[in-house]
Image 1: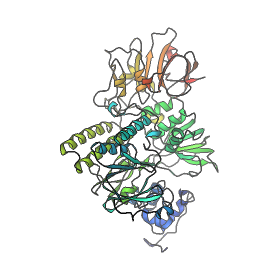
Image 2 (image 1 turned 180 degrees about the vertical axis):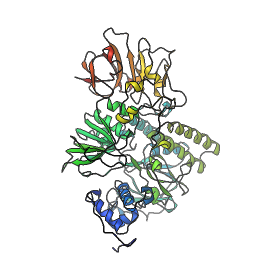
Image 3 (image 1 turned 135 degrees about the horizontal axis):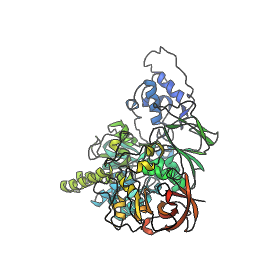
Image 4 (image 1 turned 135 degrees about the vertical axis):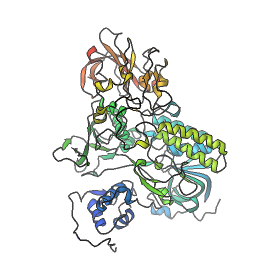
Length: 110
Length: 527
């Protein structure tokens, strides 16, 4: 994936002691990975989600969304309310792929 | 594609109430819920609810769920269970996963009532088994009959943390501590007090920094935090626990509203990301509404009224009720909501911590906010505590303006007055004579009413208190009287155990203690 560079880095990425802490449990994404994603230029929830898959697992960001948001806010020196949220997308719940093959769109309107 | 006039997403208190209201007007309504049973979180709630008598106060949550379901069933509201709404598309097309297929529905109106999900906080080891949400603990205990653990650390002193702590104690768990990063207890003082008097310590301005263990929790490290919520080195304390319950708030599950392209905003007072709503609960997309926790975190009692209020607008806009009928309904629902939204814990006051006196002007207990229980000196400021009369009389330790009034109707002698404004503190009417029936004690959802009788027994003072633990003590039992902080005070002898149907499983137990302990003994521990 091509990196989107927000600004040219003048400082090297600084590791933190709790960087190995898992934030997105479903996809096993760590705090360090999210911090590095912001360092790499991702600045919104949707960007980080697409870049790392955080919030794309079984719980669909139910657990980690607010945590990721706080990390982005801290890195960007913004308020969490300014970071925005993940755009809700269908299916909003994980659905087995087999079920999609049983789509009933063809059924004539009743 | 199947068509319905109204699709309600979620069969919790808000969704079911909305569907009932719509169905009553004759509308064609269908409810989808992804769970295998309806009722949302109501069936996990085994405690008595606050609020006004007209709106289910002093009823236990699951009972409210049962009556809501019965009402829906009687009206013939169609509830599809195990039916997961996957998305909302243009022109109100809804895709639903049910019976192993993706089914398509179309509606004139949609009410999103998907509720909320628990927040988590990350700390070292937070993802090892044994760190669970408080709501999950509640589901294990109250729905599945499984003890979540033996020794619990509760993180969060909001109402969820306090209520679940009490239920864990009822289930036979030991609650090692209730902690909160904030400097004051977040939930109702009465909920904190009933946990504190069993001996559970409260650590405010504390956070959990580590869950010990490899494949399961074998301990927790907590530490004091500074004013920026950063742990203060050197204040770490290790607690011997096997379960860490997280109760740090809820976030609205608003993905469907976002998916439908409703205008959204992160509003901290509403608990998270919510759709922007009109006064009638409609989003910027005409015909899509939100009701209940998904519109902003509140209590189940307000969710039920909100559901009905939103549905009444749907009925009106589809022509099922007249404008006049709508205005009458809407006003009465808003009035009821307004009553529930008053007091120091009202949604509008969320995050406020500058209350120093009650609406009556009595100084608010600082100890209650810092340690979960009140001191005798602080209680002296409250007339309903101080009330002194020969013979049996109530002692009311209700000291915060919360919306609740069952005590007023419980007393057959009308000794207790709350008045029209249900957030006012109960007052004792001296003209009326207490007969010591204990109905007020059992009716108080906050378990904050006691009876005291200094004169009837020559061997001591009789103190009656609410008791919701099994086994119940028996007359003649000897045990230890505990103080408001749960510290042993003196020996106590059980002289009476009242347990009637109207008390709804809250036993009123009377113990005899020596005169000098009449103001400190408030709970009982069997030997």
